[in-house]
Length: 141
Image 1 (cartoon, one colour):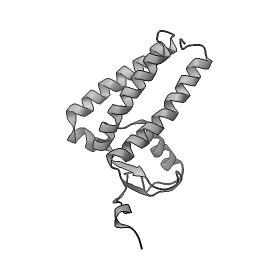
Image 2: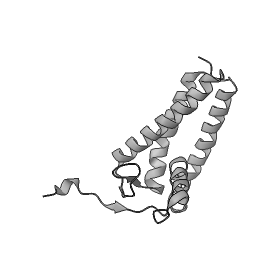
Image 3: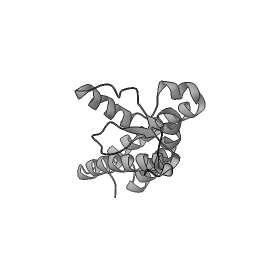
């Protein structure tokens, strides 16, 4: 017997019907771009602030690549972006994948689901960027 507390509402992202390379490209875009058309229409002020913050975070990474920022500043900015991304995604793309990463089951996310998803995703992306900049000698210690 299934515990009713463990049941979740299924969700389907707009690209779920695609297959092959188109699905892979859509998944990558979904992970890297937290906004959606529907989200822009529903939360205009939050979305506009998010775009400004995304631009600021990009400037921080560029400054870091130029050797103008210390590691702590980059980590702080990335953490701030992650917190904001949770709010953006809850309004734009409020779903997470359920099951293995290669599966196609999605469900409606609660706040903790989104915190875990964004936190882990941004940890991987941020660590990759940080290590690339550090190994290239572009990031101050």
